[in-house]
Image (cartoon, rainbow, N blue to C red; front, side):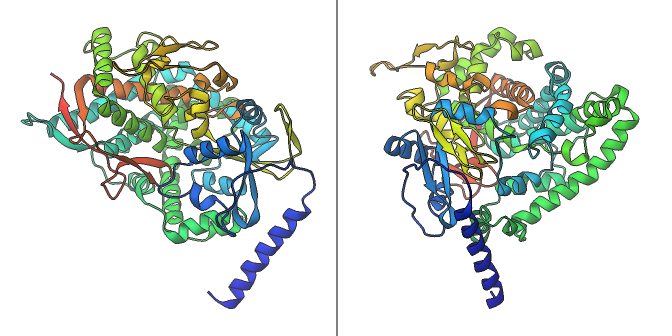
Length: 522
């Protein structure tokens, strides 16, 4: 690197540190873990390939209390909220008092400057425009699309399992990527990407690359430093080029789809069609192509993969789910009302336990736009410009909240659960000490879906929640009714592959692969 470039970088860092010290306002002094590095603080550990950020934050909460601070890049500080009342207050003030950091805005902007990217009044406007497209009435009409994609997947697997009495080894994660991409393509844009049929397209290639490619060392350093020097996020890397290719490919498809949908908008049932209707009936709700494209296929694919992993590791729970589906539905598919109602309680329990234990996003990191007070027994003051984080993975999995069996996959904890109530279920195996588990009263401080943070909370609660839950249940119901899943080695270890989102992988595999033995259920 040329001396002039080093001088510029040092100048930017010095200016950043100077402005931090001059920042007005007062933040309550808090204790926390010491920095491991003068440059990166503890961010190296939190972003390590082998680290579980939720468990690190849980360990620190035990040592420093439920609200503490961690050192970040170049002497910065971030407040971590492990107190549920503080977390609830934080989420209710999102988009106004607490907004996305410059780095998160840049990263989300790679998928389009839509409702996930917007803040304040712009965010309110976009949610208003998007709400009809993600209403229960709208998603009900798309239920058949979810089943169609699941059965297309089934057709491919049936061909692979012909004359395979002992089943076959199938890499399930790649197929979950394909079914998610095709479903969202058809339901969202009336466009079949053809991922399940092996069609090669720039969009399919880009999504698969983003989901599997690990960041290089240079990209990791760039990511960490970008939190204090946002301009660094614009430096090109292999990953940023993938994002650009994805955006370019989606833009080309969107232009065609938008034009076609505008011409046939009266019969259009896809999400994009409903958005165009909103655009045409209210000029103030105009949605740009970028806003329409702001969505993430990987969230659904990751959750489906985790569900299959957990059910493969606990065959008795897999069999219980299969029995429920076959007894209540037989060979017919559940209706929308059944998927969203109470007729399949164990299916609902498996889905929500997966979302609790394996939230695709691990935290919500925001920056204060004004001085604020967080309501604790001893209130905490956060000054304008303070970085604050709500650790999703911690809140969903902490033993202090969910009890001593918090890290276990126990769908039974959700059986009989209704909003505003707690239910304790004893599911201890025979000859083991009985331990009560369930939905603890304390977690009801969280107002998000089923008192989880998986779909966020407050004014930024995920609009596509009903879409994601319906598709998750539809695809899982088809797979479990027709196939059994297991690992050849019962002691198979699952690790985390860090790409755009943390994804599961069999520890022995080099990339984000989850090979399982799949057999037909006769």
